[in-house]
Image (tube, rainbow, N blue to C red; front, side):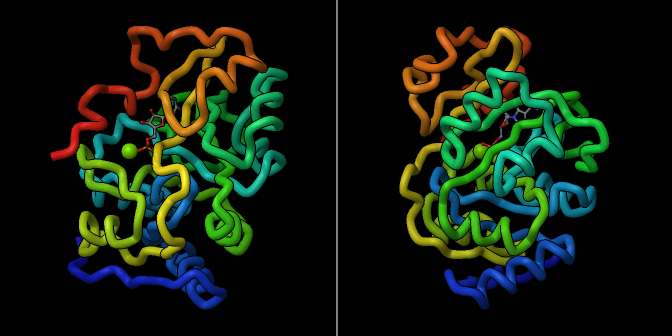
Length: 230
Ligand code: AMP
Ligand code: MG
């Protein structure tokens, strides 16, 4: 691991351009989303994605969420049935992650999905995250920008406090407006895999009652230890 101090990038064209250069070089850039700060890397670049797991100290069986700019782009990576498409139409951009089967020819690093046949995808609503995704024009794998087992960061300073010497940059979009991780649903029948920033009731108003996640723990983020602050 390189010993550096992460660059603090500002919320302007220059900051976004610098973030894109880092991503194109396979480096790690934390960035603001409406939920929490994400630790981003090019989701197609296995070495870059491996750096995320290293920097966080995250076990490689815990898959990462892929962030994309819109639903059309999401369909390159995942297969959305009618129900998933309906939820995407209703709640994207926003704090909802949909776990769906991988699309043929998706091009994502198998590390992103921890070798599963499914992928967690989200279109974030934060204007800075959206500008970054548009400028990068590719899928960004991004778990929360904290060392594994610590609390998820909602400011750039919070990111730097945990990861400054392990990442290349943080793109500062101010405090995260939601401050909670995304709600995750997936599977058939559709199940709630993780509680988060979108209320279960709002989803169920469209989907009907969500099943509880099975004992197979399809979303490792729901392990009790995931939220344990040191
Ligand atoms: P984080 O971004 O750190 O909040 O963690 C992402 C979480 O998304 C993981 O811990 C899983 O719970 C969930 N996730 C991502 N991809 C998948 C997938 N393919 N199947 C099930 N859960 C997933
Ligand atoms: Mg996390």
